[in-house]
Image (cartoon, rainbow, N blue to C red; front, side, top):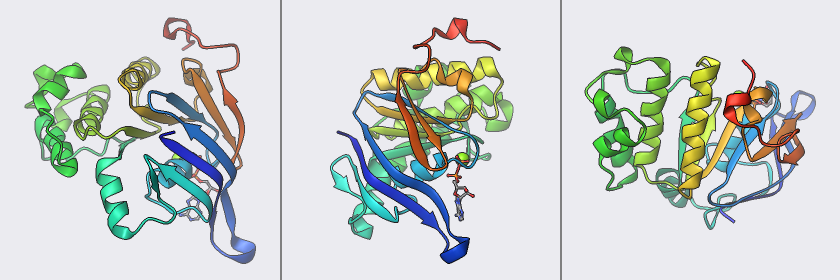
Length: 232
Ligand code: ADP
Ligand code: MG
C-alpha cells in the first residue's frame, strides 16, 4: 500500500478548548487510485491531507506513506519525503506571479531534483502554447493546469489536492478533475478534497468525512457517473 493510516487521530489545542479534527481514521490507498475525500467545511479534509503529506503530525496512530513511517521519521527523512513523495495542489493555485508558466513548472523540477522537461509537462496538460505567459495572463482553469504541471514535474508518486476546483466554475472544475483522474491512470495515487457531492459522483472511490471520522468509503452513491451526466 502506498498510503496506510491506522487508528489516526488529530487534536488541536488542550483541555476544554481541544478540537478533534480526525478521529479513529483507517485508510488504505494504493498506487493508481483516484480518491475523492468528501465532507462539509470543518469535517477534517485539509487536516487529513496535511497528515498524509507530513505538513502536520498525527496526535495518535500510525501513518505510513511510500514505505516511510512518518509518525517516527527523523526531520531529515521528513524533509526528503516532502520533496520526493508528495505534491500539493491548492484551491488558490499558489503560482509564483512573477514567474512564467514554464518557470513555475521548472520550480517543481528543481524542488524534487527530477529530470522532467517543463515544456513537455505543460504540453501534457494542454498548455504547451502558454509556456511564456504569466499567471495573470491565464484563466483560472489554465492557472490550475500550470499548478498541476508543476506537481507532475516533480514526478512524485502522490498528488494531494485541497479543493482544487473551489475557485473554478463547475465545467472547468470537472475538466480539472478529469485531468487529475488521468494521473491516477498513470500510476500515481491522487487524493482530491471537495465539499461538492455532485463532483464526487465521477469518482471510483469516495471517502466521506463527518466530524473527523470516515463515515463511508466506496463507490459513490448511485454508482460512478459519466461526467456528461453530472448536473450543473
Ligand atoms: P475542512 O478542511 O474539512 O474544512 P479542517 O481539516 O480544516 O476541515 O478542520 C477540521 C477541524 O479542525 C475544524 O474544526 C477546524 O476548526 C479545526 N482546525 C483545523 N486546523 C486547526 C488549527 N491549526 N488549530 C485549531 N483548530 C484547527
Ligand atoms: Mg479545508
